[in-house]
Each structure stands twice: as structure tokens, then as C-alpha cells.
Image (cartoon, rainbow, N blue to C red; front, side, top):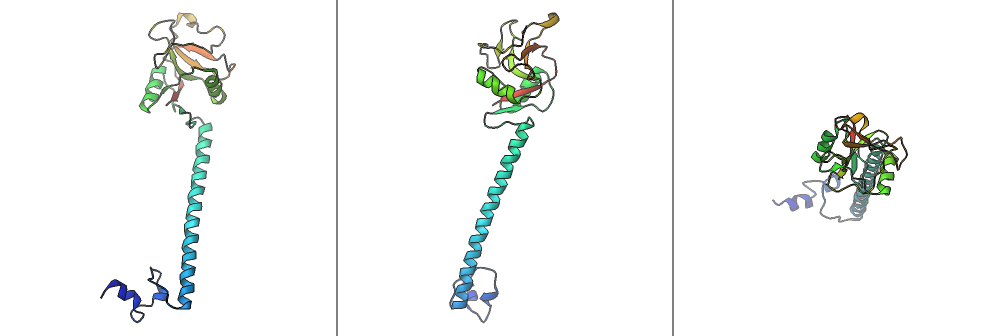
Amino acid sequence: MEFDDYYENPNRRNIMDTPGPQRHCQDEGRARKCRGSRALVIITVCLGILCLLLITAITLQHFQCSSKQGFLWGPDGLFMSSELMSWSDSRHYCRDRGADLVIINTEEKQRHLTSFIKERVWIGLSDIENEGIMKWVDDSPLKQGFWADGEPNNYNAAHEDCIELIPKKHTLNNWNDLRCSEKKKGICEK
């Protein structure tokens, strides 16, 4: 006996009471049930789509909230390390995640970063290779700096070769040179 025959034979199985697929609706009562089933399927699919949209909206809202806590800021590819580290370790942290310490080469980017940073952080600028010659992590030279008053200064003849951003200072004057071994979070950029 074939599978189709089994469902078409009302003596063997009552197709009105089956929750499974039905081949066709022969009389008016069954036709109404078929239309009702189709409507139920459409409603179920629509509710499923609405649930997916709601889940997506909640996920995006969570992403935006967590971005303000300092872990990931989104489409600009910026994120902060989760631990306090030396400049070199911060750079390794970024590079392990397909990024590098941030390069700030425009006033707009400087303003953007300073607007949401709440703590002192490493940026991708140093004069480790040549004292007094600042270079970014991509080996490009510093063209425009946003130094705090009196910086860079190698304070107390210390080798302050790595640069931090201090958000509590003026937006366009908040860079400081510091010993690279100091522990700070780093701003990474993909």
C-alpha cells in the first residue's frame, strides 16, 4: 500500500483529526478547515518573523549599551582592551584581535575619541625607536599632535616614550608622554 493511499482512505485513518499534512479538502467542512489551517500557518510565520525582529532589536540595543561601557564602540572599528597593560602588551592585545593601537591623525578623530573615553588610555604613538621622533604604529610620522601643556617632556629624565590620552584634559590638548611600562587600557582600531 502506498503512503498517499493511506491518507486518502477515510476507513483506515480519519484525516480530519490528524495534525499532519493533508492531501486535499473534499467537502465544504474540510475546505473551511483547510483555509483555517492556511491562516494559522500564515499567522505563525508572521509571529516568527516578528520574534526575530524583536530579538534583533534587543541584541542591537544591548550592543549599543555595552559600547558605552567601553568594550566595543561599533562601526568605526574602535574597542578598548579589557585589562590594564603596558603599551607593548596593549599593542599585542590589539594585534591578537586583528587591530592595532589607534592612530589619531585628524582633529575630528581626536574629538570623537575624547568624547567617550573616561579613563587614561594608550594610543598608537611613541618615540621608542628614535628619541624625540614620534611615529604611529603603522610607521607614519606624527603630523599633528594634541599635546597637553608642556608635553612631551620626558619628565625627570625618564624615558617617557609612549603616549597616553587623558580625557579629563581639554579635548585638543590631552596627550602625555609616559613610561611604556605603566599599566593602562589601550584603544584598538581595526
